[in-house]
Image (tube, rainbow, N blue to C red):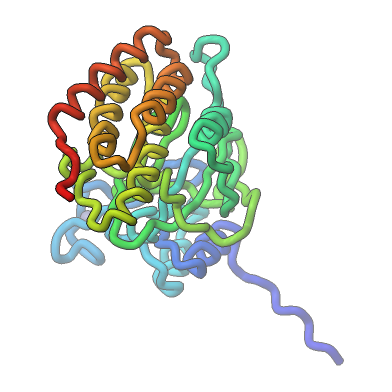
Length: 303
Ligand SMILES: [Zn+2]
């Protein structure tokens, strides 16, 4: 006699929470058929259980402990939230076009594709889910030593990112309009360096000069050129002028030292500015004067 296959007792929501926790992701319950946390807010804190020593919010209460997860999900069909920060994840959220968007507005997936093309990089293949509204979530692991927060529209139209202070709705959750489903089940890959550069809060300009050895400096300059070019290309209408000037000033520092050629920087930034929607004449004059400023203020490295 063969043993009958054991029946999985847990409902789909508990199963989804346990699956996520098995990957090392910290989960917490969201309201049934909703995206909002099911946990009490600070004003309604009973001061018991997890909050005995003071209120703890969802980011702190999120867990990978199967026993705690079973207990929490035994009381209802809760959706599953993944606290991205404690999970060591950066999730790129590609939203669909909204009804109120002007005609021709790109969705998040199109914006990401364009950003990758301008940066000369492939669209990363990684763990990916489809959201209830038809968007996509791309999961990445956070590089060691980097602490990222959330961003909205920084990478492009309809692209948000979630890291510390943020959460995403996990696959296996349901909203009235649809389900969250896994599209690509592969393990999340590390966040590509060039994307990380775009999401890292900008260092003071001095930081760009911190490249130690000359050999490394060239590679560093090349990485800075890629990152700054991508930042300009992805800049939004309100900030693209200043982003261009800031990029030219940052990159201009590599010209006196011979790490970058002036024509190379001009060409890259002018095309990126055009891609961001600036006029060619605007780009040329902004880049030229910012480079002049930077070169005048940055003598080359001492021999
Ligand atoms: Zn509390």
